[in-house]
Image (cartoon, rainbow, N blue to C red; front, top):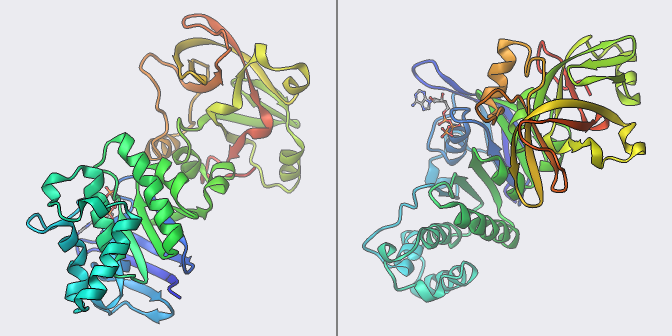
Length: 390
Ligand code: ATP
């Protein structure tokens, strides 16, 4: 059993920078956990502390029940895979993969057997006698993975292992890693700033911002129930739209129109948990061309008209960028949050709303379009602290 437990783990660098701030996290044996967040949020520092490459300033780290804060990296029985493959150029694939086993002084027969097995799993058998220079990027990354798995370590730590690969290879390698992790059932912590990787790879995702955990959950939960504005803006592509909104006399008033608040929000209001001034979040896919929405469905949302700035046809659907009155976010703090989360992938020209409509939609650039959005899918955030109140 190799569960990994972080108990108020903090890293403060000598210059005073707090890169990781009191992180509590329990990673179960065999679990695949993704650490995700924007550049500089502390992902690598956290991973390096688990690996033992970085000292822990305060808090406790336990692997398989043992406190390991003071343990040297080599005594933690953990294998790390980096973005740079760090293969030995003068060794063959076989020798590269055998290297950690030779260090561990295993006999030749055992080494051959373990390397053979790993090569088979990673489809490297044909390439065992090649040198790294004669491999593609994806093949090199598989050798690096192979070198990590031959040791059957307690855990794998991976720091953006796919970021040097082109888009197509990244998708392929995602599948390789996912299958490998399921097959070996080894506890894995994987760092990425790519939210697609985060959503597709792990059992659970940890969203970090400025060294602080924002939310931990399975990908679908993060997507459907983001805890705050930051997570809402970070998870999902294109990002969630944010607009100012008010609740008045049981009505939700927005720049896109008004409607009675739904049952769910009314209950929250009754409990006094919803402030009058709010930020409304709507995902692009929760809009539709109003002409394509039947009457019964229409009741469950708000229809509005807005000029179309740009239409991007994706084949299966289209991204339609609209210009609406009203602020995208209502304060400097929120602008910063949204920018931090990578929100606002907006084209130049003033559009401030991204919608994803069906391919059949007839909306056209330069003309006003009638668009509808589903009120049941909106999120409402408290502008003072960004908390999701819905
Ligand atoms: P990226 O995705 O860009 O790699 P990250 O989320 O992995 O970023 P870290 O590399 O963990 O972020 O860095 C977290 C914070 O700690 C950053 O603000 C960084 O500038 C700071 N930092 C990292 N190393 C040091 C150091 N040796 N001394 C001082 N500050 C540091």
